[in-house]
Image (cartoon, rainbow, N blue to C red):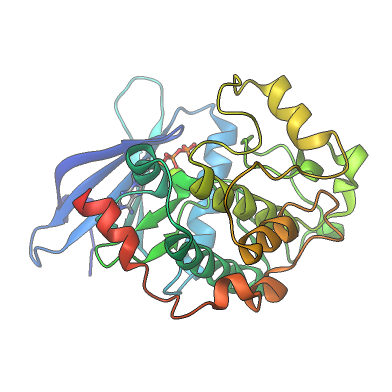
Length: 298
Ligand code: ATP
Ligand code: MG
């Protein structure tokens, strides 16, 4: 049990995100290893503070083998930077093989037998979250972490929010912007996003991630195209149908991705439907051993 931040010894920096830094830490008395995410915000950083508070509230309620475990949240008080700011620290399960983003950067692309294990586990995680009325809101490769046995888990609820209890189940559409966002979040007027509850947006993001694992680059624009916002907006929001890149993919893979990347969120596959899709029921999907070979052994 971790009672205090001083119980933890920093060993290394695991990565930097937009809101702070993630460290590898050791619990002094038990020698257990954790990841410590430190979100730093100045006194007037209202948005980040809000984001952090959300993250803490959601993480405390979450307990699933498909979601990165949070072992504690600490408020570090005034940091002494002279800006009146403070740190919010999350002690998380340490995911030895890093993020899917890290692995993709090295390996570029995966065979389908590895991808369906990833898709299956992310769907299981989303099924759990959506069952708790939680929209993740920021599914992307850097928020999918891999442990030493190749299990992928969902992390980072920075822009998630609890839908239940909000008036009209409305979404905070502009919390965070990502290339993995769905058409209805980018352009609510055209795609009816103002009446979406947000769950379908997580499915879209999963579709983009799955396709990226196959083609080896952000898949909604060409490999040579500059990923600036106008280009991304055009690719995501215009046209009635998402064009599948020319790849040698199985019919099951193509059908799965098409169900995720249906532009009209009302017609898009739901998590429950996709869990019984043939692509993620090809065999034993619980272990993504291939992935850990890729991640840890290069
Ligand atoms: P963004 O701020 O846009 O969400 P991000 O997801 O990369 O970007 P962080 O969530 O702060 O930002 O994570 C930074 C990096 O730290 C990740 O990409 C990952 O490599 C590493 N990391 C985060 N959490 C863990 C963890 N629990 N175990 C191991 N590595 C982690
Ligand atoms: Mg993250």
